[in-house]
Length: 509
Image (spheres, rainbow, N blue to C red):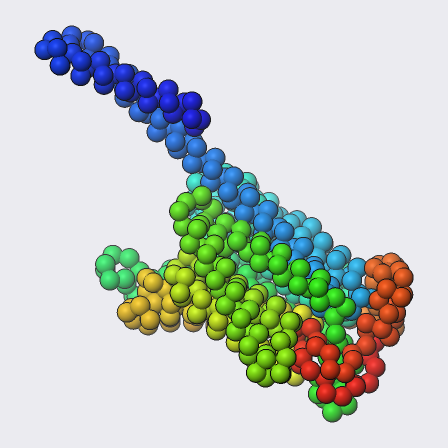
């Protein structure tokens, strides 16, 4: 409703009231038909104002949701920069192509199949209607809480699906077949991610677990529910487990582990690029979390603040822990500390206060450093995707049961919410391990997952795409086995490797 319309309605109502008041003040009885006419006019004005206000809210909610969706879309650029910066120059084009096609393939797969499985009417496990995002009224009743057009809901949820698929890219970087990656992305966005989403957001069994287990709130009329406001579990834990399986099944990069089995750092070619990517992800995360309201209401300010507090706290705690452990301010660890703080708070960003968000971020920053060191011993994850998304997603979801102002254990409630959150995390991990293993082994047996040794040594830019990202060898110190493709002594690795190299390792591809 425009300001002009508001003024018009207000003047009309004021005029009607003034006319009646004036008649009373003069001691004159207003004719009955005049009073009735004035009342009818005022009533119509009020209805017009109310309708216009409702329409304005509808438009504002729609605009905010679409804007937030575009912010989430920008995170694809952040992922591309983080992954490319933390890997070697000879694979940069491959990284960019995978992130580009994650959006394209994910869009088609999710709209055709995934959206129906996630939000379509069905049973407690999956949606069974609404293919190609269409169906009769009531098909997508699980999204009726958002009073915006269905197209806006689909657009926003589609950006989340693309994010879940992209997480896998970095963990499998530098040795995975491009076509196989596209097939994996399609399956994740069409089936695996939407199934978990249906459990939590689409009216599935997890959304009603609190009531089924009898965990009532103090009012006795409502029940605690699994809380994953913007997807610590649905998006990040799911993507993180897929990343873990993918990296484990495809195998480590050549030269990652020495003859003694100890991990060796393979430095990325551009830490500044990776840093820029983290800033872009951080920026897009405001849309990721606050946009999950799918409404321009007063809660988005608190959600955005909580998001920022957790990211900052995660970066600080990771930086100081890496300083304590490795005697250096490791930028890779610090960057992943910020990301893990963001992942951790995503579940409870609307359920905790800024203090709780800060503590959640601090814990996330500490956890990601320990997880990077642990996983690096047996999983070659060039960007730390498993540590950030799987560990951060699981721990952040569980911490809602501790820090939620309504139901958190630290806020005087019982263990009900904490138990519900833990069950949700364990169920997601179990399903993803089973479904993901079937997917990766099937792709490996048919298309194959890994490129040849020659392609890996040469670089996937030339082997898969026939074009080098940096055609001037002097710019990056060589595109094949040398230059930026070689680990060096006392060089901080990407965020997913032991940060200090005490001795010069053997050359790697």
